[in-house]
Length: 403
Ligand code: NAD
Image (cartoon, rainbow, N blue to C red; front, top):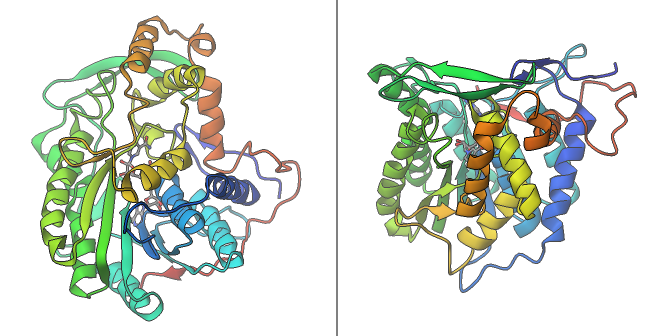
């Protein structure tokens, strides 16, 4: 069939297999173009890397950087929809199939699990596979973004919300479907909604993963772990930093502190890593974010400092994870969001914000780039792909499912 994007609100319900593969190959080429990857000091390069949330966005970029930068064996965990003959799979499914094929071609071990990373069964199966194929892990990347989580002990399902805390928040907002700049009012979260968001997106499951890996004795001496956060600035604080998701991210800081203590015995390290705002399936669902991103893209493009997931991860590995002089803040977090938070950049974004309207959207922001990057997440609009050609939805993939 000929596959065209089916956009519904802030998601696209299908994906293009060849487009997703081309996207993955471009990220691999970017990482290879920045070689060599030589850790500073005595730190060895990561040989065995586990990425939880490995199929899209920042997790996929982490896996590509580890494999094609440092030559690491990678194990990936994700939750993605397989294709049928009549329906495409999800983008993360195609991305991971393309990643594995490229890794195998390059002689790198790569194995993936498609299932619920929050479950105990998933952790157990992954650990068995690590024991059988890898031995011990040098780096665990925790990059899950999920709207819900089933507690592995009680079976209760918790949902996360994207709401302000204390009072309702009204802000300028871009409807990415109708391209109308209007207003959105988001009601404040209840105490319960704050707690359930922390349960889903906080540090508990990151800790359960590290506990399980440590207990099974599959963490190497000097093993590192990172989990990702966004801090942002004034414009996004009411809906992100000082909101339900921000509370969950504060809980990651708590977890990182506890993990640091726990890992001292093996000389390990745990860090929350602050990354910049980018277009991903997770961020496009956050009110205010698409308009902020469209303006940010224009300003950062003009400054020559625009970055996407892969550029951020290349810098996280080389400037924070595998260097003797990481950029750390006073809360012990790695920082690669410094270009976005540069006061001059933020001042320009803040100056544009009140002026932007439906009529001048394309002039004052780079909404076109936002749209391009959004469609690329699903494999559409990627250079070199013939979108008029017949394409099969099925691809070769050998992922393990979680029983
Ligand atoms: P994403 O939606 O692109 O990726 C989410 C990943 O989690 C996918 O691989 C998906 O398959 C996996 N996943 C979701 N539920 C799962 C489950 N139950 N079991 C197994 N896998 C599951 O999201 P992203 O934007 O790359 O976010 C990754 C992390 O980076 C999040 O912690 C997010 O808060 C953080 N972050 C994002 C931004 C941004 O602007 N997008 C900025 C800074 C930090």
